[in-house]
Image (cartoon, rainbow, N blue to C red; front, top):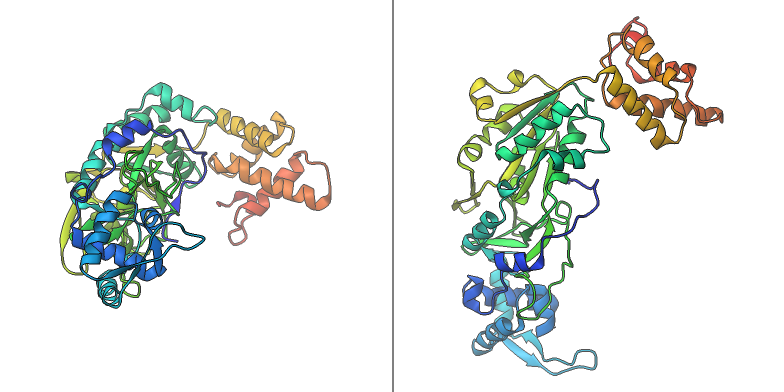
Length: 448
Protein backbone atom coordinates (compact mmCIF):
# COMPACT_ATOMS: atom_id res chain seq x y z
CA UNK A 1 0.00 0.00 0.00
CA UNK A 2 1.45 3.40 -0.94
CA UNK A 3 0.20 5.41 2.02
CA UNK A 4 -1.67 5.21 5.26
CA UNK A 5 -5.06 6.74 5.91
CA UNK A 6 -5.99 8.13 9.31
CA UNK A 7 -8.22 5.31 10.62
CA UNK A 8 -8.06 6.36 14.24
CA UNK A 9 -11.13 8.50 14.58
CA UNK A 10 -14.81 7.89 14.05
CA UNK A 11 -16.62 9.61 11.14
CA UNK A 12 -18.06 13.05 11.76
CA UNK A 13 -21.24 14.63 10.52
CA UNK A 14 -21.10 15.58 6.86
CA UNK A 15 -21.66 19.04 5.49
CA UNK A 16 -25.28 19.84 4.78
CA UNK A 17 -26.47 18.08 1.61
CA UNK A 18 -27.76 21.36 0.14
CA UNK A 19 -24.21 22.76 0.35
CA UNK A 20 -22.79 19.88 -1.68
CA UNK A 21 -25.62 20.27 -4.19
CA UNK A 22 -24.77 23.96 -4.64
CA UNK A 23 -21.07 23.18 -5.14
CA UNK A 24 -21.70 20.28 -7.51
CA UNK A 25 -25.27 20.05 -8.82
CA UNK A 26 -26.31 16.98 -10.76
CA UNK A 27 -25.81 17.32 -14.51
CA UNK A 28 -29.14 17.25 -16.35
CA UNK A 29 -27.80 17.25 -19.90
CA UNK A 30 -24.74 16.01 -21.73
CA UNK A 31 -23.52 19.61 -21.93
CA UNK A 32 -23.71 19.80 -18.11
CA UNK A 33 -21.24 16.91 -17.80
CA UNK A 34 -18.57 18.96 -19.55
CA UNK A 35 -17.70 15.94 -21.69
CA UNK A 36 -18.30 15.17 -25.36
CA UNK A 37 -20.93 12.74 -26.59
CA UNK A 38 -18.24 10.60 -28.21
CA UNK A 39 -16.27 10.38 -24.94
CA UNK A 40 -19.39 9.37 -23.01
CA UNK A 41 -20.34 6.88 -25.71
CA UNK A 42 -16.97 5.15 -25.42
CA UNK A 43 -17.32 4.96 -21.64
CA UNK A 44 -20.74 3.29 -21.95
CA UNK A 45 -19.33 0.90 -24.57
CA UNK A 46 -16.56 -0.15 -22.19
CA UNK A 47 -19.09 -0.85 -19.46
CA UNK A 48 -21.16 -2.97 -21.85
CA UNK A 49 -18.01 -4.75 -22.99
CA UNK A 50 -17.19 -5.50 -19.35
CA UNK A 51 -20.70 -6.57 -18.27
CA UNK A 52 -22.18 -8.03 -21.45
CA UNK A 53 -25.77 -6.82 -21.04
CA UNK A 54 -27.02 -3.89 -18.93
CA UNK A 55 -30.26 -2.07 -18.22
CA UNK A 56 -30.33 1.73 -18.01
CA UNK A 57 -30.62 1.48 -14.21
CA UNK A 58 -27.49 -0.70 -14.03
CA UNK A 59 -25.63 1.68 -16.35
CA UNK A 60 -26.67 4.65 -14.21
CA UNK A 61 -25.13 3.02 -11.15
CA UNK A 62 -21.95 2.10 -13.02
CA UNK A 63 -21.50 5.39 -14.87
CA UNK A 64 -22.87 7.80 -12.20
CA UNK A 65 -25.06 9.44 -14.85
CA UNK A 66 -28.80 10.07 -14.89
CA UNK A 67 -31.14 7.94 -16.94
CA UNK A 68 -32.01 10.94 -19.12
CA UNK A 69 -28.39 11.50 -20.11
CA UNK A 70 -27.87 7.78 -20.70
CA UNK A 71 -30.90 7.61 -22.99
CA UNK A 72 -29.31 10.26 -25.20
CA UNK A 73 -25.99 8.41 -25.23
CA UNK A 74 -27.71 5.12 -26.05
CA UNK A 75 -29.64 6.79 -28.84
CA UNK A 76 -26.36 7.99 -30.32
CA UNK A 77 -24.81 4.50 -30.06
CA UNK A 78 -27.88 2.90 -31.69
CA UNK A 79 -27.65 5.29 -34.65
CA UNK A 80 -24.01 4.25 -34.97
CA UNK A 81 -25.11 0.58 -34.89
CA UNK A 82 -22.81 -0.04 -31.93
CA UNK A 83 -25.47 -1.36 -29.54
CA UNK A 84 -28.63 -3.40 -29.79
CA UNK A 85 -31.70 -3.80 -27.59
CA UNK A 86 -32.34 -7.13 -25.96
CA UNK A 87 -35.69 -8.31 -24.61
CA UNK A 88 -36.77 -8.17 -21.00
CA UNK A 89 -36.17 -11.09 -18.68
CA UNK A 90 -37.99 -12.35 -15.59
CA UNK A 91 -35.23 -10.94 -13.36
CA UNK A 92 -34.81 -7.62 -15.22
CA UNK A 93 -37.96 -5.87 -16.38
CA UNK A 94 -36.28 -2.92 -18.11
CA UNK A 95 -34.88 -2.88 -21.61
CA UNK A 96 -31.45 -4.42 -21.83
CA UNK A 97 -28.62 -3.22 -24.02
CA UNK A 98 -25.64 -5.08 -25.50
CA UNK A 99 -22.86 -4.34 -27.97
CA UNK A 100 -23.05 -5.31 -31.63
CA UNK A 101 -19.98 -6.63 -33.43
CA UNK A 102 -19.23 -3.07 -34.47
CA UNK A 103 -19.68 -1.93 -30.89
CA UNK A 104 -17.33 -4.60 -29.55
CA UNK A 105 -14.66 -3.54 -32.02
CA UNK A 106 -15.15 0.10 -31.00
CA UNK A 107 -15.00 -0.79 -27.27
CA UNK A 108 -11.81 -2.81 -27.82
CA UNK A 109 -10.19 0.19 -29.50
CA UNK A 110 -11.33 2.44 -26.64
CA UNK A 111 -9.87 0.06 -24.04
CA UNK A 112 -6.53 0.10 -25.85
CA UNK A 113 -6.46 3.88 -25.45
CA UNK A 114 -7.67 3.86 -21.84
CA UNK A 115 -8.40 0.94 -19.55
CA UNK A 116 -10.57 3.03 -17.24
CA UNK A 117 -14.02 1.47 -16.71
CA UNK A 118 -15.71 3.27 -13.86
CA UNK A 119 -17.94 6.20 -12.93
CA UNK A 120 -17.95 9.09 -15.36
CA UNK A 121 -15.01 11.45 -14.68
CA UNK A 122 -15.08 15.20 -14.06
CA UNK A 123 -13.48 17.46 -16.66
CA UNK A 124 -10.41 19.14 -15.20
CA UNK A 125 -11.92 22.65 -15.27
CA UNK A 126 -15.01 21.53 -13.32
CA UNK A 127 -12.87 19.68 -10.79
CA UNK A 128 -10.80 22.82 -10.18
CA UNK A 129 -13.97 24.85 -9.54
CA UNK A 130 -15.15 22.41 -6.86
CA UNK A 131 -11.71 22.24 -5.21
CA UNK A 132 -11.62 26.03 -4.93
CA UNK A 133 -15.19 26.15 -3.59
CA UNK A 134 -14.37 23.78 -0.70
CA UNK A 135 -10.76 24.88 -0.07
CA UNK A 136 -9.21 23.62 3.15
CA UNK A 137 -7.64 27.07 3.48
CA UNK A 138 -11.10 28.52 4.02
CA UNK A 139 -11.34 26.62 7.32
CA UNK A 140 -10.63 28.56 10.51
CA UNK A 141 -9.37 27.06 13.75
CA UNK A 142 -9.91 28.70 17.14
CA UNK A 143 -8.30 28.05 20.51
CA UNK A 144 -11.59 26.64 21.79
CA UNK A 145 -11.74 24.28 18.84
CA UNK A 146 -8.15 23.08 19.43
CA UNK A 147 -8.64 22.61 23.16
CA UNK A 148 -11.78 20.56 22.51
CA UNK A 149 -10.03 18.33 19.95
CA UNK A 150 -7.14 17.65 22.35
CA UNK A 151 -9.14 17.59 25.60
CA UNK A 152 -8.12 13.98 26.28
CA UNK A 153 -4.45 14.56 25.42
CA UNK A 154 -1.78 15.79 27.82
CA UNK A 155 0.08 18.54 25.99
CA UNK A 156 1.87 21.78 26.72
CA UNK A 157 -0.75 24.53 26.13
CA UNK A 158 1.94 26.61 24.41
CA UNK A 159 2.39 23.82 21.84
CA UNK A 160 -1.34 23.82 21.09
CA UNK A 161 -1.25 27.59 20.69
CA UNK A 162 1.41 27.17 18.00
CA UNK A 163 -0.31 24.33 16.17
CA UNK A 164 -3.66 26.14 15.87
CA UNK A 165 -2.39 29.28 14.10
CA UNK A 166 -0.16 27.17 11.85
CA UNK A 167 -3.27 25.50 10.42
CA UNK A 168 -4.95 28.84 9.83
CA UNK A 169 -1.93 30.09 7.88
CA UNK A 170 -2.47 27.63 5.03
CA UNK A 171 1.32 27.29 4.84
CA UNK A 172 3.48 24.19 5.20
CA UNK A 173 4.33 23.11 8.75
CA UNK A 174 7.66 21.60 9.83
CA UNK A 175 7.42 19.54 13.02
CA UNK A 176 10.66 18.27 14.54
CA UNK A 177 12.12 16.91 17.76
CA UNK A 178 13.14 13.72 19.59
CA UNK A 179 11.68 10.40 18.43
CA UNK A 180 8.89 9.49 20.82
CA UNK A 181 7.75 13.01 21.64
CA UNK A 182 4.36 12.37 20.02
CA UNK A 183 4.85 14.19 16.70
CA UNK A 184 3.13 11.55 14.57
CA UNK A 185 0.26 11.08 17.00
CA UNK A 186 -0.39 14.80 17.37
CA UNK A 187 -0.09 15.69 13.69
CA UNK A 188 -2.51 12.91 12.74
CA UNK A 189 -4.89 14.07 15.43
CA UNK A 190 -4.94 17.54 13.89
CA UNK A 191 -7.42 16.04 11.43
CA UNK A 192 -10.03 16.39 14.18
CA UNK A 193 -9.93 20.12 13.59
CA UNK A 194 -11.28 19.70 10.06
CA UNK A 195 -14.65 18.32 11.09
CA UNK A 196 -16.55 18.87 7.87
CA UNK A 197 -16.54 16.99 4.57
CA UNK A 198 -15.32 17.32 1.01
CA UNK A 199 -16.49 16.05 -2.35
CA UNK A 200 -13.92 13.68 -3.86
CA UNK A 201 -14.28 12.78 -7.55
CA UNK A 202 -14.12 9.18 -8.66
CA UNK A 203 -11.89 10.36 -11.51
CA UNK A 204 -10.93 13.44 -13.52
CA UNK A 205 -10.50 13.80 -17.28
CA UNK A 206 -7.53 15.68 -18.68
CA UNK A 207 -8.58 15.90 -22.29
CA UNK A 208 -9.44 12.29 -23.19
CA UNK A 209 -7.20 10.85 -20.45
CA UNK A 210 -8.90 9.65 -17.26
CA UNK A 211 -7.05 9.72 -13.92
CA UNK A 212 -8.49 7.83 -10.97
CA UNK A 213 -8.65 9.97 -7.82
CA UNK A 214 -10.96 8.28 -5.31
CA UNK A 215 -8.99 5.70 -3.31
CA UNK A 216 -10.95 3.48 -0.88
CA UNK A 217 -7.77 2.90 1.16
CA UNK A 218 -7.41 6.64 1.83
CA UNK A 219 -10.80 8.31 1.45
CA UNK A 220 -13.53 7.80 4.04
CA UNK A 221 -17.02 8.05 2.50
CA UNK A 222 -19.85 9.56 4.52
CA UNK A 223 -22.43 8.17 2.12
CA UNK A 224 -23.10 5.16 -0.05
CA UNK A 225 -20.71 4.70 -2.96
CA UNK A 226 -23.62 3.62 -5.17
CA UNK A 227 -25.18 6.71 -6.77
CA UNK A 228 -28.90 7.07 -7.21
CA UNK A 229 -30.49 7.61 -10.59
CA UNK A 230 -33.04 10.33 -9.79
CA UNK A 231 -32.23 13.39 -11.81
CA UNK A 232 -32.80 16.13 -9.24
CA UNK A 233 -31.77 14.32 -6.06
CA UNK A 234 -28.47 15.10 -4.31
CA UNK A 235 -25.13 16.29 -5.63
CA UNK A 236 -23.35 15.20 -8.79
CA UNK A 237 -22.84 11.43 -8.26
CA UNK A 238 -19.47 11.62 -9.98
CA UNK A 239 -18.29 12.79 -6.54
CA UNK A 240 -18.22 10.87 -3.26
CA UNK A 241 -18.94 12.86 -0.10
CA UNK A 242 -16.04 12.04 2.26
CA UNK A 243 -14.29 13.30 5.35
CA UNK A 244 -11.64 15.78 4.39
CA UNK A 245 -8.77 13.49 3.42
CA UNK A 246 -5.74 12.91 5.63
CA UNK A 247 -2.96 11.16 3.73
CA UNK A 248 0.05 9.95 5.72
CA UNK A 249 3.19 8.53 4.20
CA UNK A 250 6.54 7.67 5.75
CA UNK A 251 9.64 5.73 4.84
CA UNK A 252 7.86 3.98 1.97
CA UNK A 253 7.55 7.23 0.01
CA UNK A 254 9.24 7.27 -3.37
CA UNK A 255 9.35 10.11 -5.92
CA UNK A 256 7.10 8.20 -8.31
CA UNK A 257 4.29 8.35 -5.74
CA UNK A 258 4.20 12.13 -6.11
CA UNK A 259 3.58 11.98 -9.87
CA UNK A 260 0.71 10.67 -11.99
CA UNK A 261 1.23 6.90 -12.23
CA UNK A 262 0.44 4.81 -15.29
CA UNK A 263 -0.13 1.05 -15.18
CA UNK A 264 0.89 -0.28 -18.58
CA UNK A 265 -0.91 -3.60 -17.99
CA UNK A 266 -4.33 -2.08 -17.24
CA UNK A 267 -3.69 1.14 -19.19
CA UNK A 268 -5.00 3.19 -16.31
CA UNK A 269 -3.72 6.36 -14.65
CA UNK A 270 -3.76 6.91 -10.88
CA UNK A 271 -3.52 10.25 -9.10
CA UNK A 272 -0.42 11.06 -7.02
CA UNK A 273 -0.75 11.18 -3.27
CA UNK A 274 -0.95 14.96 -2.99
CA UNK A 275 -3.84 15.02 -5.48
CA UNK A 276 -5.67 12.43 -3.38
CA UNK A 277 -5.07 14.66 -0.35
CA UNK A 278 -6.56 17.76 -2.04
CA UNK A 279 -8.88 19.78 0.24
CA UNK A 280 -7.31 18.02 3.24
CA UNK A 281 -3.99 17.27 4.92
CA UNK A 282 -0.85 15.54 3.67
CA UNK A 283 1.61 14.40 6.36
CA UNK A 284 5.14 13.35 5.38
CA UNK A 285 6.10 11.41 8.47
CA UNK A 286 9.65 10.47 9.45
CA UNK A 287 11.17 12.79 6.84
CA UNK A 288 14.73 11.80 6.02
CA UNK A 289 14.02 8.04 6.17
CA UNK A 290 12.52 7.76 2.69
CA UNK A 291 13.90 5.61 -0.12
CA UNK A 292 15.26 8.74 -1.77
CA UNK A 293 17.42 11.60 -0.53
CA UNK A 294 15.42 14.16 1.49
CA UNK A 295 16.40 17.00 -0.84
CA UNK A 296 14.68 15.16 -3.71
CA UNK A 297 11.44 14.97 -1.71
CA UNK A 298 11.69 18.54 -0.46
CA UNK A 299 12.57 20.03 -3.84
CA UNK A 300 9.39 18.47 -5.22
CA UNK A 301 7.39 20.87 -3.01
CA UNK A 302 9.13 24.19 -3.67
CA UNK A 303 6.92 25.31 -6.57
CA UNK A 304 3.59 23.99 -5.15
CA UNK A 305 4.26 25.71 -1.81
CA UNK A 306 5.04 29.04 -3.48
CA UNK A 307 2.35 29.06 -6.16
CA UNK A 308 -0.39 26.96 -4.52
CA UNK A 309 -0.46 24.97 -7.76
CA UNK A 310 0.97 21.60 -8.64
CA UNK A 311 2.25 20.78 -12.11
CA UNK A 312 1.79 17.23 -13.36
CA UNK A 313 2.30 15.36 -16.63
CA UNK A 314 1.06 12.27 -18.43
CA UNK A 315 3.10 9.62 -20.22
CA UNK A 316 2.01 11.24 -23.48
CA UNK A 317 4.00 14.33 -22.50
CA UNK A 318 0.87 16.40 -21.85
CA UNK A 319 1.24 18.76 -18.90
CA UNK A 320 -1.50 20.15 -16.69
CA UNK A 321 -1.85 21.92 -13.37
CA UNK A 322 -4.18 21.51 -10.40
CA UNK A 323 -4.69 23.55 -7.22
CA UNK A 324 -2.31 22.61 -4.42
CA UNK A 325 -4.99 22.91 -1.77
CA UNK A 326 -3.35 20.86 0.96
CA UNK A 327 -2.15 21.46 4.51
CA UNK A 328 1.35 20.04 4.11
CA UNK A 329 3.04 18.77 7.28
CA UNK A 330 6.65 17.59 7.44
CA UNK A 331 7.56 15.56 10.54
CA UNK A 332 11.08 14.45 11.39
CA UNK A 333 13.33 13.23 14.18
CA UNK A 334 16.37 14.78 12.46
CA UNK A 335 17.71 18.31 12.72
CA UNK A 336 15.99 20.56 10.16
CA UNK A 337 19.29 22.00 8.86
CA UNK A 338 20.52 18.45 8.20
CA UNK A 339 17.58 18.01 5.80
CA UNK A 340 17.11 21.36 4.10
CA UNK A 341 18.92 24.65 3.63
CA UNK A 342 17.79 28.05 4.88
CA UNK A 343 16.24 28.90 1.51
CA UNK A 344 13.85 25.98 1.69
CA UNK A 345 13.06 26.41 5.38
CA UNK A 346 12.11 30.04 4.75
CA UNK A 347 9.34 28.80 2.46
CA UNK A 348 7.80 26.84 5.33
CA UNK A 349 5.49 28.95 7.42
CA UNK A 350 5.90 27.29 10.81
CA UNK A 351 8.70 25.27 12.43
CA UNK A 352 7.35 23.66 15.58
CA UNK A 353 9.71 21.92 17.98
CA UNK A 354 8.41 19.02 20.09
CA UNK A 355 10.39 18.85 23.32
CA UNK A 356 10.70 16.22 26.07
CA UNK A 357 8.08 16.36 28.81
CA UNK A 358 8.24 17.96 32.19
CA UNK A 359 8.10 15.56 35.14
CA UNK A 360 4.53 16.66 35.87
CA UNK A 361 3.26 15.91 32.37
CA UNK A 362 5.18 12.63 32.26
CA UNK A 363 3.48 11.54 35.50
CA UNK A 364 0.09 12.63 34.12
CA UNK A 365 0.59 10.49 31.00
CA UNK A 366 1.72 7.62 33.25
CA UNK A 367 -1.56 7.88 35.16
CA UNK A 368 -3.54 8.00 31.90
CA UNK A 369 -1.82 4.86 30.58
CA UNK A 370 -2.48 3.03 33.85
CA UNK A 371 -6.17 3.84 33.52
CA UNK A 372 -6.24 2.63 29.92
CA UNK A 373 -4.48 -0.62 30.87
CA UNK A 374 -6.72 -1.23 33.88
CA UNK A 375 -4.03 -1.08 36.57
CA UNK A 376 -3.86 1.04 39.70
CA UNK A 377 -1.84 4.22 39.40
CA UNK A 378 0.89 4.42 42.05
CA UNK A 379 2.53 7.88 42.10
CA UNK A 380 5.58 6.37 43.80
CA UNK A 381 6.21 4.03 40.87
CA UNK A 382 5.97 6.94 38.41
CA UNK A 383 8.33 8.95 40.61
CA UNK A 384 10.73 5.99 40.69
CA UNK A 385 10.73 5.86 36.87
CA UNK A 386 11.55 9.55 36.63
CA UNK A 387 14.10 9.93 39.42
CA UNK A 388 15.76 6.50 39.55
CA UNK A 389 15.68 5.44 35.90
CA UNK A 390 15.41 8.43 33.58
CA UNK A 391 17.49 11.05 35.36
CA UNK A 392 20.53 8.93 36.38
CA UNK A 393 20.75 7.53 32.86
CA UNK A 394 20.21 10.92 31.18
CA UNK A 395 17.22 9.62 29.20
CA UNK A 396 14.75 12.40 28.30
CA UNK A 397 11.14 12.09 29.40
CA UNK A 398 9.29 11.22 26.21
CA UNK A 399 5.57 10.73 25.68
CA UNK A 400 6.07 7.18 24.38
CA UNK A 401 7.89 5.89 27.48
CA UNK A 402 4.97 5.40 29.92
CA UNK A 403 3.00 3.37 27.36
CA UNK A 404 6.00 1.24 26.36
CA UNK A 405 7.46 0.62 29.82
CA UNK A 406 4.10 -0.16 31.41
CA UNK A 407 3.27 -2.49 28.52
CA UNK A 408 6.50 -4.47 28.95
CA UNK A 409 6.02 -4.65 32.72
CA UNK A 410 2.51 -6.04 32.25
CA UNK A 411 3.81 -8.55 29.70
CA UNK A 412 6.00 -9.95 32.47
CA UNK A 413 3.09 -9.93 34.92
CA UNK A 414 1.07 -12.03 32.47
CA UNK A 415 3.99 -14.41 32.02
CA UNK A 416 4.37 -14.87 35.78
CA UNK A 417 0.60 -15.10 36.20
CA UNK A 418 0.78 -12.39 38.83
CA UNK A 419 -1.65 -9.64 39.63
CA UNK A 420 -1.58 -6.78 37.14
CA UNK A 421 -0.08 -4.14 39.40
CA UNK A 422 3.05 -2.17 38.74
CA UNK A 423 5.99 -2.49 41.08
CA UNK A 424 9.44 -0.97 41.03
CA UNK A 425 10.96 -4.38 40.37
CA UNK A 426 8.71 -4.97 37.35
CA UNK A 427 9.46 -1.51 36.04
CA UNK A 428 13.23 -1.89 36.36
CA UNK A 429 13.00 -5.24 34.53
CA UNK A 430 11.00 -3.51 31.78
CA UNK A 431 13.62 -0.74 31.58
CA UNK A 432 16.45 -3.22 30.98
CA UNK A 433 14.45 -4.92 28.23
CA UNK A 434 13.40 -1.69 26.55
CA UNK A 435 16.70 0.06 26.00
CA UNK A 436 19.59 -1.22 23.92
CA UNK A 437 22.72 -2.39 25.68
CA UNK A 438 25.80 -0.78 24.17
CA UNK A 439 29.09 -2.73 24.56
CA UNK A 440 29.70 -3.32 28.27
CA UNK A 441 27.59 -0.40 29.38
CA UNK A 442 24.68 -1.42 31.62
CA UNK A 443 21.40 -1.37 29.72
CA UNK A 444 19.93 1.09 32.20
CA UNK A 445 22.44 3.73 31.13
CA UNK A 446 22.14 3.27 27.39
CA UNK A 447 19.92 5.11 24.97
CA UNK A 448 17.00 3.62 23.12
